[in-house]
Amino acid sequence: MPADEYSGKIVIEVPGTGPNTYLNKRKIGRSLLFNYHDYFAEEFNRRGIAYFSYSTRYTELDTIPPNFDKVNKERFFTYTPSTKVKDLEEIIKFLKQHPRLKSSQFILLGQSEGTIIATLLVENDSVAIDALLLCGTPTDDVFSTIQWQFSGEASMINFRKFFDINGDGIIQKNEYENSDPRALKRVGNLSFAALDSNEDSLLTAEDFGTQLQPRLAAINSAIENNDNEWIWNNFFRIGTDWIDEHRNLRPNSERILNLDIPIFIFHGDDDANCPVDGILKLQETAKAMNKENIHVYTFEGHDHSLEFLGWVIHETMPEGLRKLFVTAEEL
Image 1 (cartoon, rainbow, N blue to C red):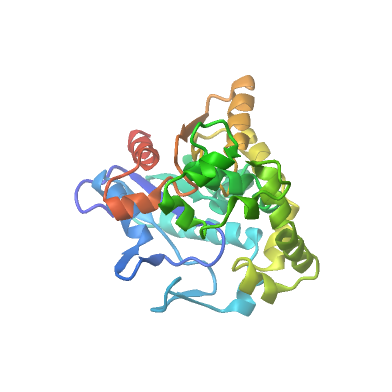
Image 2 (cartoon, rainbow, N blue to C red):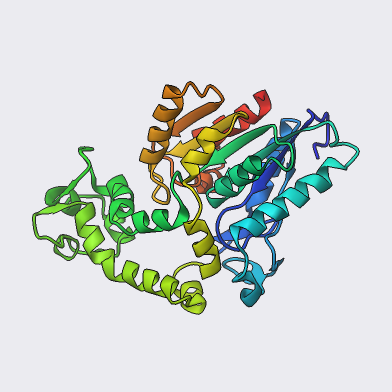
């Protein structure tokens, strides 16, 4: 809660994929320790807005990096989107009973998968929500998004940042070899030939997709075989029940377009987790449908987190996050 005047608004952060704690403690380098949620709590509070974060089921705080959490893995394998929605519903019901929050505006801040959980909750219409703030929004289902991430398109987004000097969407040999040595170091000083799978003297999504195909095949095999241990240890800290349920959900964009409460979408054009193209298509469709409740903001050079780590490292708030806080304040 804000130390000073309370504006009558509370933002509830709906976390992304995998185990999360109400602090999400992280470490950069050898010494820079921080709590992810502190940044949001302090900034929202500064603007008179309450902020609430929570730990996902079967997840506790711990002192061991890099995740600083302790997870009951076997139980977490059973944690699915429908359970997450039910948990969020109970959290909101509980908070609405708080004397200082009874007449508040309740705003959900969805991050990545959290944007799906938030829209599912609003669609259920089990508790009243006043607005949605959605960041790093997948417009498709999660399984389809995973396929895209290993198609080569996501790799091109990451590589273009450093090597696409003329901005034409492809990387030529001379661009790659004459780039900043620091950029080459970030990709392991790989030679151009090692990346140019089809030997056409250009780096495109096709090259990266060819190289990633064995990895994607292994992930899909583990999903089909319900190999939770392999997925947890080699891909991401999730279970196949979570993937299977997400796989059967409607695309997130369809659900967003069916909602009528105010929705504000914030997305970086360098998002290598969820393509910005889906957001731009959603924006066009919303306009064609006269959905005046949907507002889309895209930010040049911003990644999936809206450059959050830049805020931590450089102590300067990125444009996308600044717009997020201003939007919440003006609601």
